[in-house]
Amino acid sequence: MSQGGSKRPIIIRRKKVVHAHHGGAWKIALADFMTALMALFLVLWILSVASEEQREGVAEYFSAPLVAAITGGDRAGSTRVIPGGGPDPAHIDGERVRVSTLQHTRPSPQERRYFNDLQERIERAIERDPELRQLRQQMRFDITREGLRIQLLDTEQRPMFQLGSDQVAPYMRSLLRTMAPLINDLPNELSISGHTDSVPYAGGYRGYSNWELSSDRANASRRELVIGGLEPAKLLRVSGYADRVTLPDIPTTDPMNRRIELIVLLPEIADAIRSASTASGSELTAPSPDSIDDAMRESDVEADPTEADPTTGAQSPTTQSE
Image 1: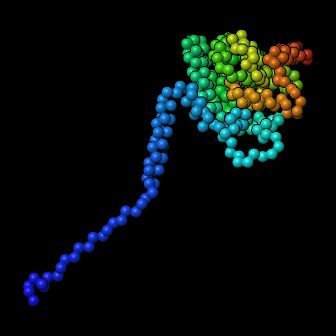
Image 2 (image 1 turned 30 degrees about the vertical axis):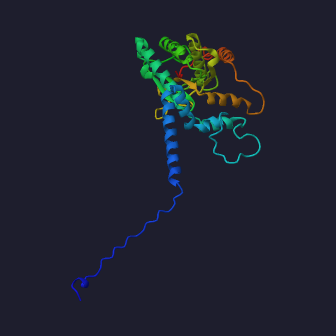
Image 3 (image 1 turned 90 degrees about the vertical axis):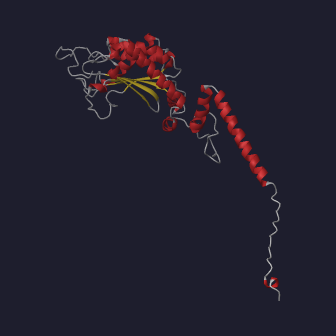
Protein backbone atom coordinates (compact mmCIF):
# COMPACT_ATOMS: atom_id res chain seq x y z
CA MET A 1 0.00 0.00 0.00
CA SER A 2 1.30 3.38 -0.88
CA GLN A 3 2.19 5.91 1.75
CA GLY A 4 -0.46 8.39 0.57
CA GLY A 5 -3.22 5.85 0.91
CA SER A 6 -2.67 5.51 4.67
CA LYS A 7 -4.10 8.98 5.36
CA ARG A 8 -7.80 9.22 6.16
CA PRO A 9 -9.76 11.75 4.12
CA ILE A 10 -10.99 14.90 5.93
CA ILE A 11 -14.74 15.28 5.62
CA ILE A 12 -16.27 18.72 6.33
CA ARG A 13 -19.97 18.77 7.09
CA ARG A 14 -21.76 22.12 6.85
CA LYS A 15 -25.20 22.43 8.41
CA LYS A 16 -27.65 24.01 6.12
CA VAL A 17 -29.56 26.81 7.90
CA VAL A 18 -33.13 27.20 6.78
CA HIS A 19 -34.60 30.64 7.61
CA ALA A 20 -38.18 30.14 8.81
CA HIS A 21 -40.80 32.72 7.96
CA HIS A 22 -41.31 35.03 11.05
CA GLY A 23 -44.50 36.74 9.93
CA GLY A 24 -43.21 40.32 10.30
CA ALA A 25 -43.95 40.57 14.09
CA TRP A 26 -41.01 42.93 14.51
CA LYS A 27 -42.76 45.42 12.25
CA ILE A 28 -45.78 45.56 14.59
CA ALA A 29 -43.56 46.02 17.64
CA LEU A 30 -41.63 48.80 15.89
CA ALA A 31 -44.88 50.50 14.87
CA ASP A 32 -46.16 50.40 18.46
CA PHE A 33 -42.87 51.82 19.72
CA MET A 34 -42.89 54.64 17.20
CA THR A 35 -46.54 55.45 18.03
CA ALA A 36 -45.77 55.64 21.77
CA LEU A 37 -42.70 57.77 21.08
CA MET A 38 -44.76 60.14 18.92
CA ALA A 39 -47.41 60.40 21.65
CA LEU A 40 -44.70 61.19 24.22
CA PHE A 41 -43.25 64.02 22.14
CA LEU A 42 -46.74 65.32 21.43
CA VAL A 43 -47.55 65.47 25.18
CA LEU A 44 -44.23 67.20 25.89
CA TRP A 45 -44.93 69.76 23.18
CA ILE A 46 -48.45 70.44 24.51
CA LEU A 47 -47.11 70.94 28.04
CA SER A 48 -44.44 73.32 26.77
CA VAL A 49 -46.99 75.58 25.04
CA ALA A 50 -49.79 75.29 27.66
CA SER A 51 -50.38 78.13 30.09
CA GLU A 52 -49.84 77.82 33.84
CA GLU A 53 -53.60 77.70 34.46
CA GLN A 54 -54.05 74.87 31.95
CA ARG A 55 -51.27 72.81 33.54
CA GLU A 56 -52.75 73.39 36.99
CA GLY A 57 -56.14 72.25 35.72
CA VAL A 58 -54.66 69.01 34.37
CA ALA A 59 -52.78 68.38 37.63
CA GLU A 60 -55.89 69.09 39.68
CA TYR A 61 -57.96 66.64 37.61
CA PHE A 62 -55.55 63.77 38.22
CA SER A 63 -54.85 64.64 41.88
CA ALA A 64 -58.44 64.72 43.16
CA PRO A 65 -60.99 63.25 40.75
CA LEU A 66 -63.08 61.82 43.60
CA VAL A 67 -63.64 65.27 45.08
CA ALA A 68 -65.00 66.45 41.74
CA ALA A 69 -67.35 63.48 41.66
CA ILE A 70 -68.65 64.12 45.19
CA THR A 71 -69.25 67.79 44.54
CA GLY A 72 -71.17 67.19 41.32
CA GLY A 73 -68.36 67.59 38.80
CA ASP A 74 -66.90 65.09 36.38
CA ARG A 75 -67.59 61.57 37.66
CA ALA A 76 -64.86 59.93 35.62
CA GLY A 77 -62.86 59.31 38.78
CA SER A 78 -65.53 57.16 40.44
CA THR A 79 -64.31 53.76 41.67
CA ARG A 80 -67.75 52.17 41.60
CA VAL A 81 -68.05 49.48 38.91
CA ILE A 82 -71.81 49.10 39.09
CA PRO A 83 -73.77 52.10 40.41
CA GLY A 84 -76.27 51.29 43.13
CA GLY A 85 -79.99 51.77 42.72
CA GLY A 86 -82.14 54.45 44.30
CA PRO A 87 -81.20 58.09 44.82
CA ASP A 88 -77.80 59.39 43.93
CA PRO A 89 -75.58 58.52 46.95
CA ALA A 90 -73.65 61.74 46.43
CA HIS A 91 -76.75 63.75 47.38
CA ILE A 92 -77.77 63.07 50.98
CA ASP A 93 -79.79 65.54 53.00
CA GLY A 94 -78.74 66.98 56.31
CA GLU A 95 -75.63 66.83 58.37
CA ARG A 96 -74.37 63.62 56.72
CA VAL A 97 -73.52 65.61 53.61
CA ARG A 98 -71.38 67.99 55.61
CA VAL A 99 -69.58 65.17 57.46
CA SER A 100 -68.91 63.37 54.19
CA THR A 101 -67.59 66.55 52.59
CA LEU A 102 -65.30 67.29 55.53
CA GLN A 103 -63.87 63.76 55.35
CA HIS A 104 -63.07 63.81 51.66
CA THR A 105 -62.29 67.42 50.80
CA ARG A 106 -58.76 68.67 50.42
CA PRO A 107 -57.57 72.02 49.09
CA SER A 108 -56.35 71.50 45.55
CA PRO A 109 -52.80 72.56 44.61
CA GLN A 110 -54.23 75.62 42.90
CA GLU A 111 -56.28 76.58 45.98
CA ARG A 112 -53.23 76.11 48.18
CA ARG A 113 -51.30 78.50 45.96
CA TYR A 114 -54.09 81.07 46.22
CA PHE A 115 -54.16 80.72 50.01
CA ASN A 116 -50.37 80.96 50.31
CA ASP A 117 -50.40 84.04 48.08
CA LEU A 118 -53.07 85.65 50.29
CA GLN A 119 -51.01 84.92 53.39
CA GLU A 120 -47.91 86.46 51.84
CA ARG A 121 -49.79 89.62 50.81
CA ILE A 122 -51.23 90.01 54.31
CA GLU A 123 -47.79 89.55 55.86
CA ARG A 124 -46.27 92.12 53.50
CA ALA A 125 -49.01 94.65 54.29
CA ILE A 126 -48.43 94.15 58.02
CA GLU A 127 -44.67 94.43 57.64
CA ARG A 128 -45.02 97.83 55.92
CA ASP A 129 -46.94 99.27 58.89
CA PRO A 130 -44.76 99.85 62.01
CA GLU A 131 -47.79 99.62 64.31
CA LEU A 132 -49.13 96.39 62.82
CA ARG A 133 -45.69 94.81 62.60
CA GLN A 134 -45.81 94.19 66.35
CA LEU A 135 -48.99 92.09 65.91
CA ARG A 136 -47.39 89.55 63.57
CA GLN A 137 -46.46 87.33 66.52
CA GLN A 138 -50.15 87.19 67.50
CA MET A 139 -51.24 85.84 64.12
CA ARG A 140 -51.33 82.23 62.96
CA PHE A 141 -51.94 80.98 59.42
CA ASP A 142 -52.70 77.37 58.50
CA ILE A 143 -54.59 75.50 55.79
CA THR A 144 -57.26 73.16 57.15
CA ARG A 145 -59.95 70.96 55.61
CA GLU A 146 -62.23 74.03 55.61
CA GLY A 147 -59.80 76.46 53.99
CA LEU A 148 -57.27 79.08 55.04
CA ARG A 149 -57.56 79.78 58.78
CA ILE A 150 -56.28 83.08 60.16
CA GLN A 151 -56.15 83.27 63.97
CA LEU A 152 -55.79 86.59 65.80
CA LEU A 153 -54.63 85.81 69.35
CA ASP A 154 -54.72 87.84 72.55
CA THR A 155 -51.78 88.30 74.89
CA GLU A 156 -51.73 89.69 78.40
CA GLN A 157 -49.78 92.74 77.23
CA ARG A 158 -51.70 93.37 73.99
CA PRO A 159 -55.36 92.23 74.05
CA MET A 160 -57.43 92.55 70.89
CA PHE A 161 -60.51 93.81 72.77
CA GLN A 162 -61.21 95.87 75.84
CA LEU A 163 -61.54 93.93 79.08
CA GLY A 164 -64.79 91.93 79.18
CA SER A 165 -66.37 93.71 76.19
CA ASP A 166 -66.57 93.65 72.41
CA GLN A 167 -64.88 97.06 72.09
CA VAL A 168 -62.20 96.57 69.44
CA ALA A 169 -58.72 97.81 70.32
CA PRO A 170 -57.34 100.45 67.89
CA TYR A 171 -54.55 98.22 66.55
CA MET A 172 -57.00 95.32 66.09
CA ARG A 173 -59.32 97.66 64.16
CA SER A 174 -56.42 98.73 61.94
CA LEU A 175 -55.38 95.10 61.38
CA LEU A 176 -58.86 93.97 60.32
CA ARG A 177 -59.33 96.91 57.98
CA THR A 178 -55.92 96.24 56.41
CA MET A 179 -56.79 92.58 55.81
CA ALA A 180 -60.31 93.23 54.45
CA PRO A 181 -59.47 94.28 50.85
CA LEU A 182 -56.90 91.49 50.54
CA ILE A 183 -59.41 88.83 51.61
CA ASN A 184 -61.96 90.44 49.30
CA ASP A 185 -59.73 89.69 46.30
CA LEU A 186 -60.59 85.98 46.54
CA PRO A 187 -64.09 84.82 45.55
CA ASN A 188 -64.27 82.47 48.57
CA GLU A 189 -66.77 83.11 51.33
CA LEU A 190 -65.73 83.85 54.89
CA SER A 191 -66.48 82.39 58.32
CA ILE A 192 -65.79 84.34 61.53
CA SER A 193 -65.77 82.79 64.99
CA GLY A 194 -65.04 84.23 68.43
CA HIS A 195 -63.41 82.36 71.32
CA THR A 196 -62.71 83.16 74.99
CA ASP A 197 -60.71 81.63 77.79
CA SER A 198 -62.40 79.67 80.58
CA VAL A 199 -62.49 82.51 83.15
CA PRO A 200 -66.25 82.94 83.82
CA TYR A 201 -68.29 86.04 84.44
CA ALA A 202 -69.48 86.69 87.99
CA GLY A 203 -73.00 85.59 87.10
CA GLY A 204 -71.86 82.37 85.42
CA TYR A 205 -73.96 81.42 82.42
CA ARG A 206 -77.25 82.79 83.77
CA GLY A 207 -76.75 86.29 82.37
CA TYR A 208 -74.19 87.80 80.08
CA SER A 209 -71.49 85.14 79.71
CA ASN A 210 -68.63 83.97 77.54
CA TRP A 211 -71.17 82.80 74.97
CA GLU A 212 -72.48 86.32 74.39
CA LEU A 213 -68.98 87.78 74.62
CA SER A 214 -67.50 85.48 71.97
CA SER A 215 -70.45 86.10 69.63
CA ASP A 216 -70.29 89.86 70.12
CA ARG A 217 -66.57 89.94 69.43
CA ALA A 218 -66.99 87.92 66.25
CA ASN A 219 -69.72 90.29 65.12
CA ALA A 220 -67.61 93.33 66.01
CA SER A 221 -64.83 91.90 63.86
CA ARG A 222 -67.32 91.46 61.04
CA ARG A 223 -68.26 95.14 61.20
CA GLU A 224 -64.62 96.22 61.03
CA LEU A 225 -63.96 93.99 58.02
CA VAL A 226 -66.97 95.40 56.19
CA ILE A 227 -65.87 98.96 57.00
CA GLY A 228 -62.42 98.04 55.66
CA GLY A 229 -63.86 97.00 52.29
CA LEU A 230 -64.96 93.37 52.62
CA GLU A 231 -68.01 92.57 50.49
CA PRO A 232 -70.88 91.73 52.92
CA ALA A 233 -72.15 89.00 50.60
CA LYS A 234 -68.93 87.03 51.22
CA LEU A 235 -69.83 86.54 54.90
CA LEU A 236 -71.41 83.14 55.39
CA ARG A 237 -71.10 82.42 59.11
CA VAL A 238 -70.56 84.50 62.27
CA SER A 239 -70.49 82.48 65.48
CA GLY A 240 -69.27 82.37 69.07
CA TYR A 241 -67.81 79.28 70.77
CA ALA A 242 -67.16 80.71 74.27
CA ASP A 243 -64.43 78.57 75.91
CA ARG A 244 -65.55 75.28 74.32
CA VAL A 245 -62.83 75.18 71.63
CA THR A 246 -59.51 76.03 73.26
CA LEU A 247 -56.04 75.82 71.77
CA PRO A 248 -54.27 72.48 72.27
CA ASP A 249 -51.51 71.98 74.82
CA ILE A 250 -52.10 75.23 76.72
CA PRO A 251 -54.19 75.93 79.86
CA THR A 252 -57.81 76.87 79.23
CA THR A 253 -57.27 80.11 81.18
CA ASP A 254 -54.38 81.21 78.95
CA PRO A 255 -55.05 84.58 77.24
CA MET A 256 -54.18 83.06 73.85
CA ASN A 257 -57.54 81.26 73.95
CA ARG A 258 -59.15 84.67 73.57
CA ARG A 259 -59.00 84.86 69.80
CA ILE A 260 -60.83 85.57 66.56
CA GLU A 261 -60.68 82.98 63.79
CA LEU A 262 -61.23 83.93 60.14
CA ILE A 263 -61.62 81.03 57.71
CA VAL A 264 -61.52 81.64 53.96
CA LEU A 265 -63.81 78.74 53.08
CA LEU A 266 -63.40 76.21 50.31
CA PRO A 267 -66.41 76.26 47.92
CA GLU A 268 -67.47 72.71 48.83
CA ILE A 269 -67.37 73.54 52.56
CA ALA A 270 -69.55 76.62 51.98
CA ASP A 271 -72.01 74.43 50.07
CA ALA A 272 -72.02 71.89 52.91
CA ILE A 273 -72.81 74.63 55.44
CA ARG A 274 -75.78 75.69 53.34
CA SER A 275 -77.00 72.12 52.82
CA ALA A 276 -77.16 71.56 56.58
CA SER A 277 -80.10 73.99 56.66
CA THR A 278 -82.29 71.44 54.83
CA ALA A 279 -81.64 68.59 57.27
CA SER A 280 -85.32 68.25 58.21
CA GLY A 281 -86.47 68.47 54.60
CA SER A 282 -87.85 71.98 55.05
CA GLU A 283 -86.56 74.96 53.14
CA LEU A 284 -84.49 76.92 55.64
CA THR A 285 -82.23 79.81 54.76
CA ALA A 286 -79.12 80.92 56.54
CA PRO A 287 -79.49 84.22 58.39
CA SER A 288 -78.09 87.24 56.64
CA PRO A 289 -75.22 89.20 58.22
CA ASP A 290 -77.64 92.07 58.92
CA SER A 291 -80.01 89.79 60.83
CA ILE A 292 -77.10 88.42 62.87
CA ASP A 293 -76.03 91.97 63.59
CA ASP A 294 -79.55 92.85 64.82
CA ALA A 295 -79.63 89.77 67.03
CA MET A 296 -76.31 90.69 68.61
CA ARG A 297 -77.52 94.22 69.32
CA GLU A 298 -80.68 92.86 70.95
CA SER A 299 -78.60 90.61 73.20
CA ASP A 300 -76.57 93.65 74.24
CA VAL A 301 -79.75 95.41 75.33
CA GLU A 302 -81.12 92.39 77.18
CA ALA A 303 -77.91 91.60 79.08
CA ASP A 304 -75.51 94.51 79.42
CA PRO A 305 -72.18 93.35 80.95
CA THR A 306 -71.70 96.75 82.62
CA GLU A 307 -75.10 96.74 84.33
CA ALA A 308 -74.92 97.54 88.04
CA ASP A 309 -75.40 94.67 90.50
CA PRO A 310 -78.81 95.21 92.20
CA THR A 311 -77.55 93.97 95.57
CA THR A 312 -74.26 95.88 95.88
CA GLY A 313 -74.60 98.67 93.34
CA ALA A 314 -71.16 97.71 91.95
CA GLN A 315 -70.46 97.21 88.32
CA SER A 316 -70.52 93.57 87.20
CA PRO A 317 -68.90 91.32 86.27
CA THR A 318 -66.35 91.28 89.11
CA THR A 319 -64.57 88.27 87.61
CA GLN A 320 -64.78 88.06 83.90
CA SER A 321 -63.21 86.65 80.83
CA GLU A 322 -61.49 88.98 78.45
